[in-house]
Length: 330
Image (cartoon, rainbow, N blue to C red; front, top):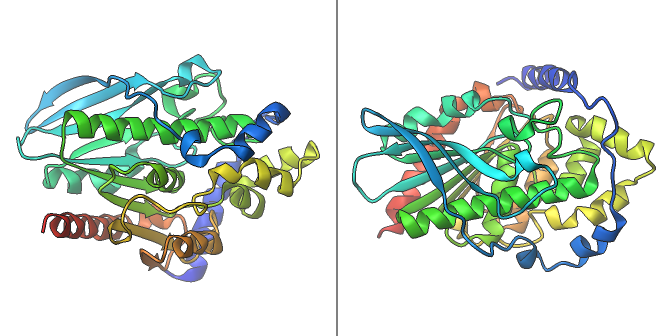
């Protein structure tokens, strides 16, 4: 896609995104929690202590079982409606050794339609099981907020930490439950915020067979402070005299480039948009370098390329998954 057209589409998208903003300050910083997050051992911080029971509600449709799943979140927040982890699923009835694909959506998504339109048909053709987890404070988990995702990332510094931690540990719980109860391969795919969350999961979860991260972030504090996507959050922080240096310090435990993934480098695919206006090219590059330069694809598009290049994303992802599974079975 043409560079200037890509930038234009992203700017239009950002304008639309920012039309919805918090009506009151979200700023909160619990000083008592700051030493805990700064001094915490990262592995302990994201530890999964027990694997919760996953409950399914399914209906039969041809060769698939369609429905939802839910389980108690291993990390509790102060918001009751946010403490049940849940999602949609499409489960194959082929009886073969399963391939489970977990697809993690983006920030402020108000439906899964965009993500299903990219991957679902291709995954079902291969008879994979597909799971779409709901991130904290999104969809029905956001009943007390103005819009989906408002409370996941905001100027409430400690709530953001809890929400990111909650997302990581919840996905770890789903992965481990699938491995223990269903067996087979687990493929983790994240898009935008979902890519960032998936990157963090890969640092602590050894049961991931393939990781694909699309238009991902790496350093959340950097993106909030230096890109248009975080402008209202930055304004809220600055109004309360909270500096970039303070945010970096508090959110350092949320950085994906501070550790190495437990997935082998050969099983990681990173996809970036060269003209992305939501996330910076440098931040994406920093992760790629820190992880030892796994396979990375550069699309000539912006963040809106998630939609405009969905066929290419699906094709490149499916080819990488199939190659990785084939090589892993040799």
